[in-house]
Image (cartoon, rainbow, N blue to C red):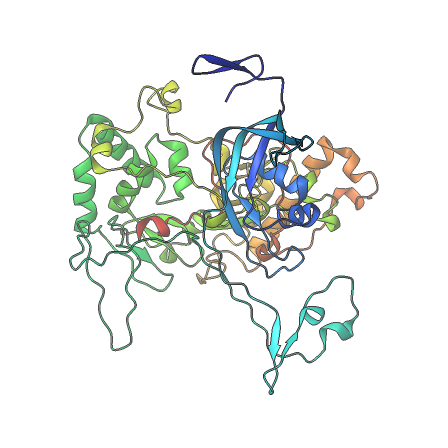
Length: 511
């Protein structure tokens, strides 16, 4: 390939390339008779340009563009060094007494091809919205199941044949050789699952040997860690920094028996992979009840201590929508994940993640060239305080946060929490030691504070709305299941590096 102002040498001759535009080539897997129809199968010119702007995306081809049940085939992106030529064939008159013709070819370079999309995968099964009658005749159901315009109630109450599309198509579009191996070598600490009388489907992978203890609300509290957990930490605890981190974490649990993982990360500097091995040595993980997703010191039972209510968890999600005065696009708080940016595995080439080995943990993670090396060792892996503490006048780093009640640093919120101090009689799985509906009252108050912050920073959003008397606006409770409409937000708010907003699913790291 030769760019503008360059020349390509071939043999002893030199081919001068004019200032030609750079082009993108798509090797279309079909006979093109209508260019417009062909472009529609690729999403149009705008769709192709959007895919080209993201080097990690694959180009999708839909055989039936208007059919939502059509499964695409995908093209991979490759760099290319080619030219698009326009060749004309000119034929002269026939010579007298000869059958040969005077043929001349004219060549013109139309552009330089730097990128090519090739459809190398297999096409998946296609699923049609059809119904088979008693006589075997196929009847289309598209006009019955697709709502192309606002319909009346009769449209939804019609009697239709059962139609259940597949929940997912093939995740891969290239064949993979699978070789059966009689003896599988698992990691240390793996135990074969107990075989019951029912049919057993094998596990997809070996369990991660992090040896955490999980406790439900009705289970007994463990008093010590598993021996395998202590052995796993002993293997990687080989330098003074690791031993210092272990002592710091012990002091944290002595001062406060219940911690979230984000709170731990904000108080001590430890690599996440080492923290996975250290936490099971000092605490157990609760998966249900008012202390769910939290780490509790061994031997401490929060269900027996009324003062443990300050360590309970609050699932708080910022409310947004027209009824609250602002839409998701107006929200200055960034959503960590967005369903609009999600791509299936077959439509994006994901980078291969680096697996951390025991050797890496022993040597100490983080190289001099890493981005984290700019920070001192004492704070290299520390998160900001905002990942677990709520303060009045400050927006949370993400729309969904999991706070412990003691980390709500607002006097009015603490009054709600301590309304029944000294009169706690029962610890329930829903409310713990607090009064019923305490979580709802906290969410309402926090939502009002956040709305006031947004009102002060963006008054134009509320120009058409009126506030209640004395500013006491009551917001209806919105359940977490409605938090689906997350779009890409503005970049003026920068959350703390490494913070996590969804429920800390450490359980996925330990099983």
